Length: 509
Image 1 (tube, rainbow, N blue to C red):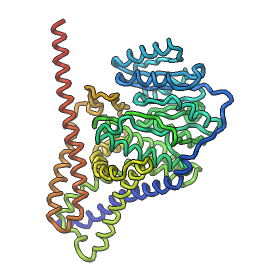
Image 2: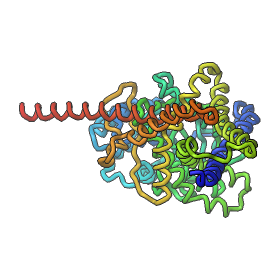
Image 3: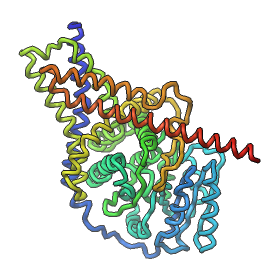
Image 4: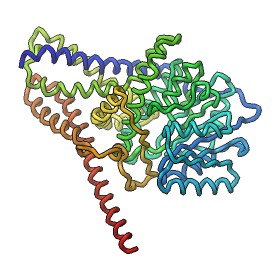
């Protein structure tokens, strides 16, 4: 087995190099954020429109019975002249949600709101298709989009619309905040994930002159910008990022309003979270494959190109972490050259860069919580769970990346919305097709293997240094594996109960 030692060392350093490269990029993002955060928080005083322009609010939804009424009513409460505001409900629902939304639209229309209910039967292009089709009847010079799990504050439009007095501005994005942040450990960690993006990443990119993306919701587009960039396209699962880069390549400027917030619901169940992760990671790689060649050939600065590369290829880290996991077992049993004195500096080098990669994530998320004034002690206590969850989702995200690379098509699977109530709803990922293995099986197997490796590692002096990382691997995979199986069993029980109830009702009739 010693013959395997040198290839394993090379493999190890290549994987660590990828992890640390993206880790060092996170340090750079944090540094830029600290440098520009004052500008982000400074008051915005754009020129004023002499007359407020016509704005269209678009509400794309699909089977959103728990939140359909809430978002429609919130949109109708936006503080803006009613003769200047059109609301389009873009409902592709196949269940009773369509009736709920239709009735609410009629009520709002009777109350004096300009509400248009658009119901498609074919779902062609999914969300992007709905947005594209609605453009034909959109009256507004500007388009503001809200997903169904958002609750826009009444002043959101008046807070940002005057930014468009600058004719070069194509899109203004607001910052997400979280309605159910403290509902559970899972939602707390997801909030930290999102804060890292909205507090640190978006601010750093936007205020340092780099390209950044529309986040699919809670942002305003200039209609002519959408048209100029080629419109909404549905050949990726992240139509928002795709359009964002096409628009900025066409010369449009984007603005990020850090100080304007819009609350939304965080997925409260693991299945909903995994659905979202799969879509986001696959969509980013699809967009990278589609647009990176064009970005790299463009005449824009290399600083923008490099940042676009890191942004669009960021899911690659999930593959690197999973490959790192595959090194654990052989490294425990193969006699590596690193064990000899001559390789001592190599051990120090590899260990240092491993810590650089791990600490980068910690620094990134700590900064996002510190910037909001959250307790550093509470954040530190949650960090192990955050790292474990990030490791646990690497199997799913690696699968998403590989699907994007080989060109495997998949539907836009919406993230389930609950509006504070955990209802019986099938995990959309599990519902696509009958799986050969129960959900979470691979993660559970990896978790058990890593647990055994941890027990071996703590008994050997040389491998003891890697034990904490192996424990993180074990914790993350076991978390995802056990929770996925538990949700699957719970859903099966609910479905069985519903089937019995339906049969009972049928018999009684």
